[in-house]
Amino acid sequence: MSERTASILAVGSELLGTTRVDTNSLFLTEELEALGISVVRKACVGDAFEGLKAEIAVALDRAPLLVVTGGLGPTDDDRTKEAVAALLDRALVRDEKILGHLVERFRRRGIEMPRVNEKQADVIEGAVVLPNPRGSAPGYLVEARDRTIVLLPGVPSEMRAMFREAAAPLLARTARGPAVRRRVLKVAGMAESAVEQLVQPVYAAHPGHEVTILAAQGEIQLHFASRGTPEAAAGVLDRIEGDFRKVLGNEIFGRDEETLEGVVGELLRARGQTLALAESCTGGTLAGRITDVSGSSDYFLGAAVTYANSAKVGLVGVSPETLDRFGAVSEEAAREMAAGARRAFGATIGLAVTGIAGPGGGTPDKPVGTVHLALENGDGTRLHRRFIAPGDRALVRRWTTSAALNMVRLHLLGRADARRG
Image (cartoon, rainbow, N blue to C red):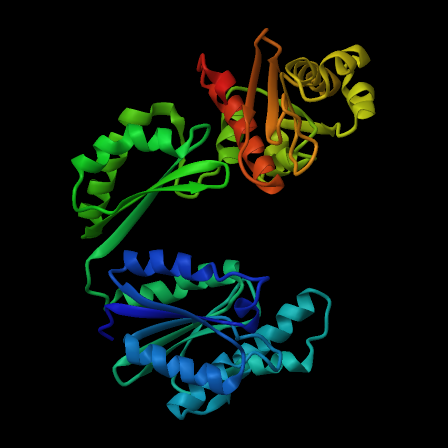
């Protein structure tokens, strides 16, 4: 094998509609670049057999390595393996060892294996089988003349593990191109234009390297890359990251796969703090983000979704007089919600969110997107922030949860401007 360029093909008719998006290719691009293999083509194709076979032929004509995801399941519309075998004029051979593993996998779950799953034990003649400990569909690496095809499951968790554990070591033996290393730094609580203004000198200091600023939901991301040997590329990335950190400091909350909720959780754990919430406009999505982190029960005690005024009064003790005088979307209500959440759950920190997510409900004084955050700590700290979140209802809620988490993060870091969130 001598591949230095690759095509990626995502199989599944659902990817051509409006309900599914191919994200596997993003992961595969980064992994292939790290091996010194450049991706020159990406495509999605439906399950129709002739169309699938034709697309595989086109991809193999474009690059000597083709990585395919999806279409390895047991149903009639899973035809990737069959299309590759037909294109290469190779037989499919039943592997009794794989079949035995499949039967045992179902037996451990207390289920008799459906007969349709037997096709997953059919191996393309001459292929290397890539094991799948996380699912039922094995993958394959097939060599034909000067071309290599890697077949992976479409389920992201299965695909990622199989590529890293089985396919990548095989491809690494012959990949000769310079490796590409990428890194992402993440910022919360700042506008894209403000971040851009601060980091402009970093761009100028590193000409010739790919540096991009992107606005994601609830955060700003700095993407940068370097090409060379793994050691040299990593060294360049370290220098670029150091320069970004010089100008942004603690505005950077994480790197690469780190999430804001995960970083906040680690800070709470490290400082022996516990958190409770009172949510209104976010309707429980802030609690959802926090509990998406494994082990969050170490520091997160609970949340009251106080959407109605009666819930604000009954669950976290907001004064009816406060609501009458200032309204539910106000600094006064938010502060009482934070105090009530801390008291109700016995947490060291109470955090409150109240606002107008839209599309209706806004007024000239309180337009759609108006949000109040409040934090109360048992050490006497009491913080508040008001801001107007951009976008539609979903985006307002996302920006709000990010701002709330960032308020907690900055508070735990001892930042005097934590109220900015």
